Amino acid sequence: MIVMKFGGTSVGSIEAFEQVIKIVQHAVAEQQSAPKLGQVPGVVVVTSAMSGVTNILIDTATQAAVGNEGHIDAAQQSLTNKHQLVMDTFIDDPAERADCDQTIADRLFQFGRMCTSIAALQELSPRSLDIVSGMGERMSAPMLAAVLRSQGITAEFVDAGDIVVTDDVHGGAEPIMDLTIARTQERLQPLLQQGVVPIITGFVGTSEKGAPTTLGRGGSDYSAAILGAVLDADEIQIWTDVNGVMTADPRVVSNARRLNQLTYEEVGELAYYGAKVLHPKTAMPAIDKKIPLRVLNTFEPDNPGTKIAARTENTVKGTVKAVTSIRNMNMITVSGNGLMGVPGVAGRTFNTVAETNANVLMICQSSSELSICFVVPAVDAGSVTLALEKEFTQELDKHVVDRIECQPDIGIIAVVGSGMRGVPGLAAKIFNAMATEEVNVIAIAQGSSEANVSVVIDAENLSRSVQALHTAFELDKPTEARTK
Ligand code: ADP
Ligand code: ASP
Ligand code: MG
Image (spheres, rainbow, N blue to C red):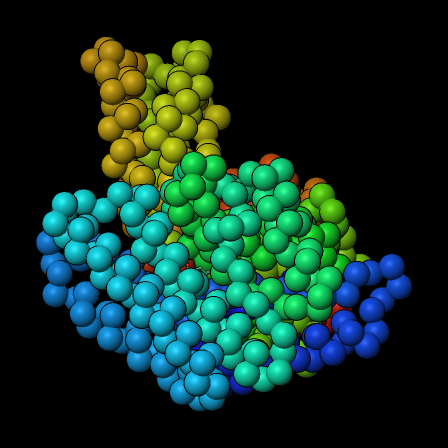
């Protein structure tokens, strides 16, 4: 059995839908005709919202929260048109069409009502935002199910809110696996046994208390991996708009190459440091059951894509696999002469940061113990700085801590590859490449996994530094053709 996830662009246009129909038809035929020995046949589809839809939903709600209701009608209209275009093209059956029209209209009516109340209260809570932002998938999934039925595939829409049970961390919820397993088995097994293809909303879930939640932006990849693990799938396929995971973001490096294979660890590092092609948590559910993930191109389905598994066959010592970067970061530095030898400052710093729920992407401490610095997303920097100033009020008064500084417009570059483990000279090579570009390296750290070296630099230098490192490590060439 396979789980196939289609991303926003893969359901973003008529051409994309045509491709998805062919890909699902092919997968269903393959599963029916030649179920591999010992494997349960079946296809499960997870879909994102049509591309751009989640952004429109979030932007409209955000505008409403500052009292600006002017965008609601226009958003409803443009979202209706976007979905109608697809239905006009593929859904001929009048009853099916009426049903589908009604579903889209109901969702957009609910969206309008939500935005009006948000505007009245001038408040957008994370809980309300989850209701609004999950509506894109709740339109695309029932529509995709109807489109597939119109092409002769026995498909049925399933709302992930009925099967994926999460904690109540709105905007970044985590699944509660035992409850998710029970509900998923109960809902999906009968469908699979009857040869029905479930078409499931990505991105969304429901908290134990019954409130709609989301798994975070780009979270449909994670949904697919969660469901793949729960169903013990043979493979989790992530269908997107590029040929696989590449040596760098092809939008930044024009000669980036497709990687044939990667480990879970490598892909985890890449995604964590900004490679948008996969949600950072995607590999996690697959690891325990060793389910391979495959990243494939909806628009070039014959391309082999990238296989992600526990081990790769091609890890050569010293090989760097890819370079990635992440923007919109701030670097916070806690410094002071008095810090030297004062026990517990680092502990208190990170406990305080943890209480703000900010995600720390990188930590560096100078050997002199005069400063501790770490990188957090820009959106969290204000609350982190305030919390630290409060925690260290006395130390600041006594000049044990001199400064708590926040440096804006920072980015991180990560050079990733399991084969880098224990290889000397990699950091020097990174420094050299940056020096040639005259880019100032603010901090450097090696991830605990040793599959990653990360450097902090000014955000304005990110793109050209990624390009320079890609060239320095000859990532545009196959491993065997590299000279260094
Ligand atoms: P989807 O809508 O299918 O989930 P995303 O836009 O979330 O697609 O992710 C695919 C995009 O990720 C690609 O178009 C590409 O620009 C970007 N990307 C960033 N880093 C990488 C990388 N290392 N390899 C491949 N794609 C990458
Ligand atoms: N639609 C959601 C987003 O845009 C989830 C996803 O596409 O994976 O973030
Ligand atoms: Mg994505």
